[in-house]
Length: 192
Image 1 (cartoon, rainbow, N blue to C red):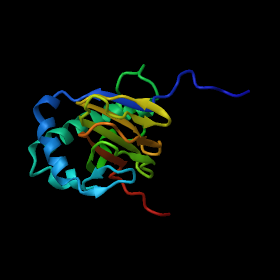
Image 2: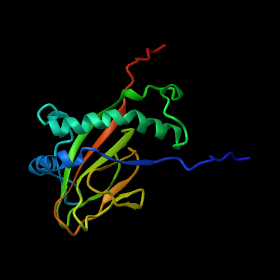
Image 3: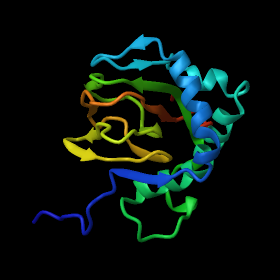
């Protein structure tokens, strides 16, 4: 007999950033100014450590990253539980939810005719994309062959091994901040 899950596991989580209206325009200009590296598909990105390296100089990046760190234990709990029917309890997990770290944190800017081909972020555990600008007519995020239309101020978390892309769009100014999260337990296991 094959035992089946009694639920469909959560593979992505989307939520709104409460301070989007206060910081999005500043972050948009920061990303647009610094997105110089080409992505395969035509978009431009910053360095992968851009936001990590600039958090101390940009209060807006710090506000966003602090908020992500604040909600990350609940995000991790939902992914670990596989469904949203349990109350958040870090003792149920078998690992410490605050030992996840944002290891890469970069900006991406797309103009008309630009996108990014299918890719994943393996070996990272969790990836995220926060949307700064989604002009009307912006291409959706395609995650595991499903179109996901996100609006400005929304963030999506998903497993790092999931394939995703953005098809070439028909508008200028689509902009996001992406990141990769890694579990980094503080306890060292010594070899036997």
